[in-house]
Image 1 (cartoon, rainbow, N blue to C red):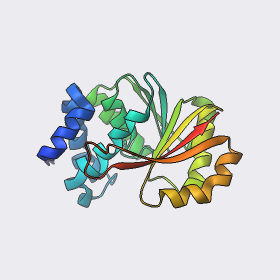
Image 2 (image 1 turned 135 degrees about the horizontal axis):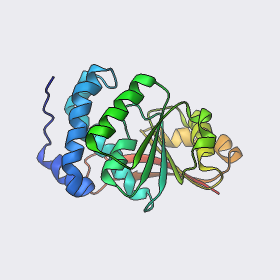
Image 3 (image 1 turned 90 degrees about the vertical axis):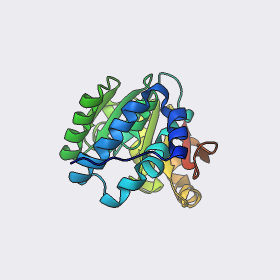
Image 4 (image 1 turned 90 degrees about the horizontal axis):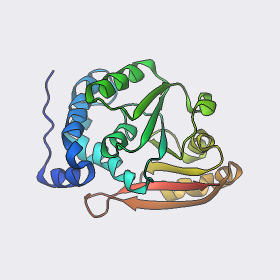
Length: 213
């Protein structure tokens, strides 16, 4: 199955800024998403025309919040959003993709092998099951769970020090209000709602950042 997902002029400008000389790899990743990713149910066919803007670039711009050479644990990676976009945009990062479903892990392994990504580890399991195997500086997630539940899945992976970066939508502020007690109980000391990619995306990405330790 061959589907070409073309970049618009605006998307190409943004993608070049985010991925630099690795844009070709990012384009190959998008082809994987549009073909085998869709065939195996990792995303729906309606998402294919908006893969770049709504998904890949939306995720990749979050790397501006991540320190150099950081260890990043991506919870509920699914189709590699956001974890694989981070690995493509920032080869200095050490990325662990945490995903409980075997078929998704198999797909992630195949994509990493094809793209020759040596900074990615795919770990099958639920976040709460792999806490002792993962020690991250940053824990990330997108479209996994409401913050009241997500805090308990991500904060423990930091082992007392680091940041949670949760990609959220318009309900971010409301979610933070509801989760504030849980976050504090788990060791989160400062929670804020940020937008990233303002200068290059038509619709910037909303991120909840939780400082721990």
